[in-house]
Length: 155
Image (cartoon, rainbow, N blue to C red; front, side, top):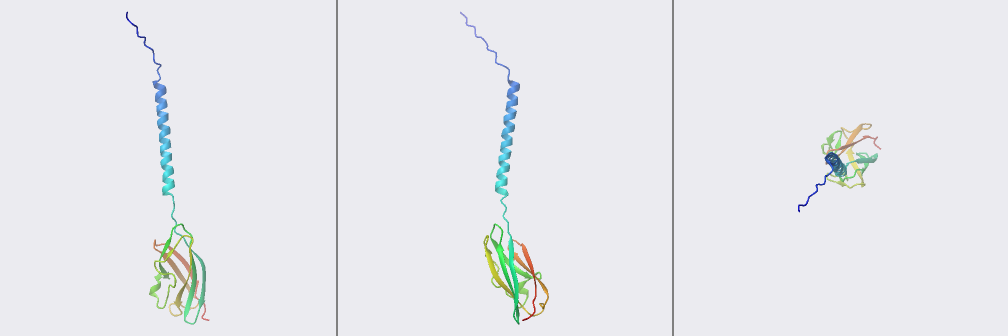
């Protein structure tokens, strides 16, 4: 006796399965790209901002010197290291009798920290009463934070 094997006809789903496969691949790629984009934003967009604010400035004078009282505050989200102080775009050391006071080269301001200091300059040429003087606090990343004073009269 011969057994008859009946062939069952498998329904033709090749068109549907192709569409389903394409949709699954598209959704997977979209999720992968979105995940990569999210990770890049999370990791690469962490902005590290250096920002020094000159919070207070006032000037006093004696017979021989002008004292510039300054309060620096680190308003950024990274520590800041002081590189130099410029007077009228020249290093403070170029002027005889000047002093950076507490603002020494290499001084570091932590996030949120403030530092008070006194910069002194002599009452002698090129500095004279009524003169506008530009100061620049320069950080190790070569960012400049300028401020201006007017030299007061001698007491």
